[in-house]
Every structure is written in C-alpha cells, then in structure tokens.
Length: 195
Image (cartoon, rainbow, N blue to C red; front, side):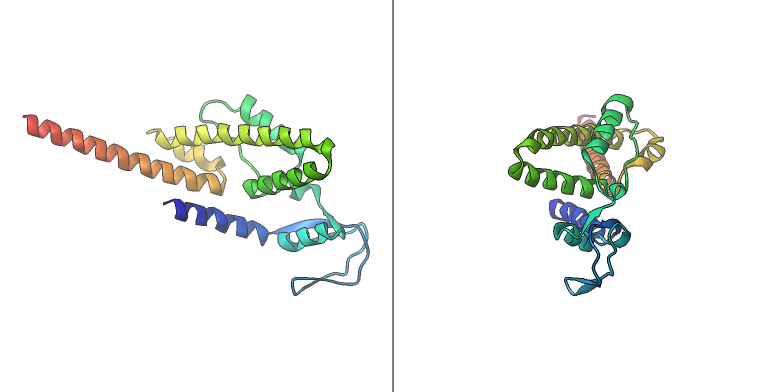
C-alpha cells in the first residue's frame, strides 16, 4: 500500500511538472533551448505560456520569472493558513488551488535554498514551514474525520479535497472499513460460539 500511495503522489507531481504555467520574460532572446525543446522568442516584459519544467529552467537561468498566479507565495500561504485554522470548523474543508501540494513542495524547497544563501530569509523560511505544517495537519485531521465518519453527507464535503487528499481519504476510508468489518466479524463469531 505504501509504494502504491507514493507512486500515485509522484504521478500527480509529474502531472504538475507537465502542466502549463505563465512566466514573464526578463530579457529579450530569439530562442532558447531547454532539454531539446526550443522556446521563444522571448520579449522582455511579455508573458509566455509553457510547461512548468521549462518555465522552471528559464527562471533558474534568469531569463524569466513566474507569473504570481502560478506559484505559491508566502502571502498566499499566510492567507491559506488563516482560512484553514481560523475560519474552517468541523469537517468543513476549504478548496485549494490545483496542484497546491506540488506548489507547496517547491515553495518550501526554494525558501530553504534561499535561507541558506540569504540569512535574512531564514526567519521567513521557518515561519513558512510552520504555516505549511499547520495547514497540512489541520486538513489531515479533517480528512481522517471525514473518512471515519459514517455520515451520508461526506460526498458533498469531500468535493473540496485536492487530488492528493482524495487519494489519502480513499485509503483511510478503505482501511477503516476493512478494520471495522474484521472487528465486527470477530465479535459476531464470539457471540455465536458463546450461545
């Protein structure tokens, strides 16, 4: 179950890498080759749509920056944290953007790298990590509560789950159902023997 679970999450992350994002060109170039893929022309200040993995290479090379709507920022993470921990109560799960967890992983990785080369960024990295952990823990509790609930309303409540969370929800729900069945069968068997 563990390897299958990780493979599913890896597939979703690969899908993110191949998704279309926007970058803003920081320079003008006729053409750039990224891993045998030709990109361009780039015009300074203009927006370009491309696959995430290509965009990431352009950003790393200093040719472009991500469009603010296509990456997770500290400000967005702070708002999500407030919404998840202060506003959402009980089983209520607020919707997240597509590929949220892939963006979160990259945000934390970028922040970690930045904090090692820019000591002033260390506090923001640590705070971002705490916010991310709080969001994940809060949503995890809600997912487990939903998965263990016998309520018929769970279908409506699970619509806000991300695809990664849906995988977890289905696995927990299945494991709980198997466990309950095994326990109840054992109890029924004991009762039948004692009669």
